[in-house]
Length: 316
Image (cartoon, rainbow, N blue to C red):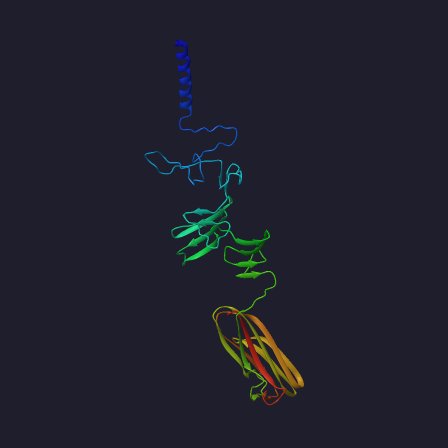
């Protein structure tokens, strides 16, 4: 009897030692993956395994795992260490996934006034998607927080870049202007303004024979630009020349930018073309002439007479 008591005491001590060594630990040892059941039997219960701090303080406790699978079937995937695999939608900060169009998969992040999704690199690149209720008004924003350009790509090839100064490059990774396009531009609805002076219906205009520079009658246009813009000017003068010459020129804001001459002929046909960028503000483009012959320009009564000035403003 004494020997049996001694053996039983030794066994109890062994169990006590094992309990002391594994205090606070749950060891599940099985040939395969062990299971924890939330019901003894019956249909699907939709119960949850909860980790709480203590029976007295039932606040949520934490969970650490090498790999986690969230799925209605454990056969869906076998996550490796450091992997998190989710079969369904993911919600952060929300109890109800926003998915009115029933997309197959949704990552939904909800903040009380703003939310942000970060994608970062160890080299310091910070790219984010933001939703904000009051960032210069309510808006969604995508871009880089760090001092790096933002590039858009398709088929793993870069196609459009916004650099850190706000320049946009299409077909170039290093834009040199507010919009820098390396390729052909096709546009509809491009904003233009066209101004006309003179024309084939114009009445009679007399030219001086002093051979000094003078403004050609009716061929002057004044306009305003709200911002810098490209401007194109074109003019044409046709009339009798009576064997003499006609010199004409384009004058932009008092500056001569183009000259043309028709010399010693019975019929004059002068034309000129100019294109450049003008700053914001008021501008004047006019045609001037000089000739020793003088004469009368009458487009509405002579089918070989014309005087016209056209100005096209691009984008302002």
